[in-house]
Image (tube, rainbow, N blue to C red; front, side):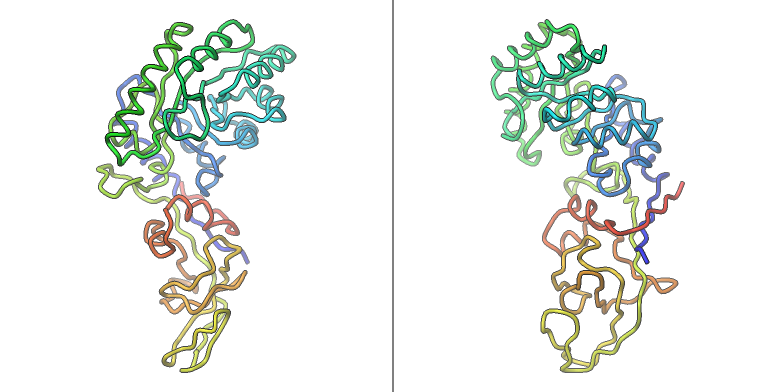
Length: 339
């Protein structure tokens, strides 16, 4: 039996509307649905967000292709610059590529010409993240100049990413660098779409022409003191296999921990292969097995254990962040969508 993930699409849409209301009228909302919409199901989430989002963002070409195949016809930006093997399908499915090299632009132009299409690109500028992108104004200007000469390429946008929105000084420095890069690109497209902010940058008030919103859509904030009314949209439940009594001094499952008193526990059909780490945390007796856990917390309704109610709470338990919890917690769960 699979676990159950209940995902509230009405709440998802409400979260998006809260973000949209805070944006200037001409600023676009790009809904980030990479990593299977942070574990919530990309195709269903994109369809639910279709009337609110202006466009979508994914990490991989394959993710963009799946969205197209599910009926999403709005722009889809692939955030990771493409491998050569990605380009044919990306062009075929009208995806927008992030690029940071001449070779990528050349290959996209060549494939677009072959298919009789014009493909949109966004230049990736590295303002300090040191992940993808070119890091000097001269480099980004050269790329823009090259792209502007190609008939099968449309230089639509330029973007970067804040590496630490909690550090106000570094944010200002990055923003200043990005503004210089924008001016270099505007020589070749005066209406270039400028975007720098994910959820954290948006909450700090950096909007420009577009914001890329991920975690806020799914009901979580990148920092605790953020003032925006969003609610978690997913709960995960697992069936209880049986109730057990672990007698004082006995052990159970992996780990060697012995009960310090007679302990009522519930064998639950949720193991580390279902997404959460195996390690012993409060409310759990010893380490998880691959397919089951032994829980000492109270069982919920109808013989199901509530695995996930609040990802922030679980993230604190496991010493990680809500993003990681969300993308893994429902790996072996049947997704049930509430509309």
